[in-house]
Length: 251
Image (cartoon, rainbow, N blue to C red; front, side):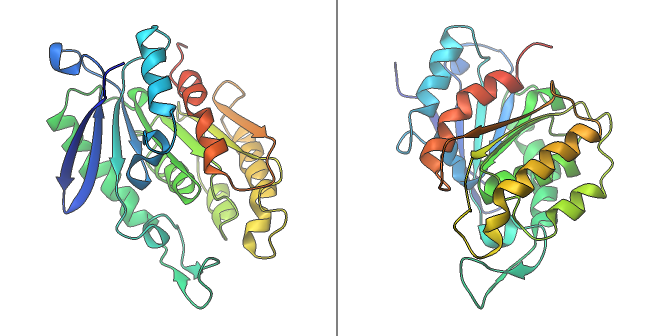
C-alpha cells in the first residue's frame, strides 16, 4: 500500500497533521472527519500499524475514508484537564484546568477552519473526536460539551480518575444527543497507584453506567475492558480500528 497523504498545516499557531484518505486528490467526494489529540498519536505510523489497518478496512469497504486531523497541544496538562487540580505527574505543580477554552477552540474555531479548507461531511454524525489517556478525557469532555458538533467519540484509557469529572458529568443533560461513545481500558489500570490514578477503573465504570442510565444505550455507548495491569498505549491503540467500525457503523 502506498504512503498515506499527510499535510502539515498550521492554524492559530497550532501545528496540525492532516491525513487525507486514499483517493482524496482524484475525486470530489466529501469525507467524515476525526479530530485526534496529541498530534494524532493514535494513528501515527511510527507508533503502531493502526493507520495501515484503517486504510485496509477502507479499501475493503468496511470503513469509510476518513480525514484525520491530529491536533498538537500547547500544554496537555493544561488544555486536557477540566479543572485546576494538583498534578499527579509532577508533585508541587498543578493541572491548569483549561479544557473549556480548548474545547471551545476545537468546536468553534478549528472545525470551521477544517470544514472550509477540506472536503468534509460537517454534520455531527460524520464528526469524531478521539484520544488516549488525558487525550481520551478531553475528547469526551469536548464532545459532551458540544453534542451538536461532535457525534462520534473515542476514549482510549481515558483519564476518568481526574478529580471532579464524575461530578461534572452528573450535572450534564445528556438525553437524546444522538452521539456514540466507545471507551476502553485495561482491567487493572491504576490498581497499584497510590495517587488519584487508583480510581481509573472504578471511575471509568461509573462513567459508563451513568451514561447508560441517562440517555445512552448499549447501542450508543460501548466499554471494552481488556487484560492489562498497566496504562498501555500499545495495547489501547490496537482497538482503534474496531472502535471506528463500531462508531461509524450503519444504524
